[in-house]
Length: 348
Image (tube, one colour):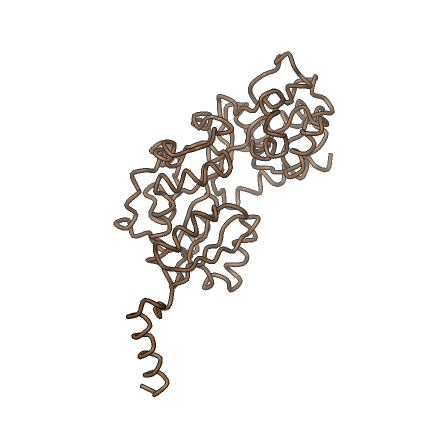
């Protein structure tokens, strides 16, 4: 040992004995997740309890996340939060490591109904659910005060919304809605079923739709330009003043369901701190901690059922509304069937 090292050790010993400083080097957990997806106070509480540092890096799409990882970024992170289709892709590419189930003591908090939907990883070997969500339908009650409209996806064929309706610029979502309306799976690869759904969009819905938009529909709804839109509740509610929610917004997910997504916490194969990563995943699923995440967005309590007992806010819609929603699973090369039909629709 060099003299300088001996001096350092000695100083650390004295300082620690006096309670002045801890010379133990803190572990660092690198979390790669969606923008604004992890409450800061939960992260800070974890850092304090486990005497570590959490570095949060954010992304805006699964594609951005995946491309960064496969182009040299995989060794930089411990936890990543992909959606269900990308979990499948990353499992197949051997990019993830198994969760040590004995360390995941909050496993029993996960909704059994959700586990049934997780055909891509039904034993939660590689993916621990973070959030399950679905797009729905928002109607501007000030523009259509009589409430006389269908409460399923056929609402987009209702002529009273002509020129004031929008759907997301997302082909799995829009085609998925039409498939559900026809009674088919949102993951079908049957071309005849896809043709039926495509015909519904083109002939019945498109005449009323003013645009396909996945970002600005909330602002257009708040301004009164849109009377009907398909999209995520938090986007619409986030633009309308809270005191006007009740008088302005009728949000619902059709009883027969629709496409849904599940973002899950996964530990990367090259994680340098897999044990700490597992502790973080388990920490998130302490019901009192998970409730803070739900409160931050006014999300419904579907993933971690016990968290409902700790929530301080009212969800934007009931969790039970998603019971019949179906996950958009990875379709591999068959996904081209959806994309080609969508491209044909967009150029008509």
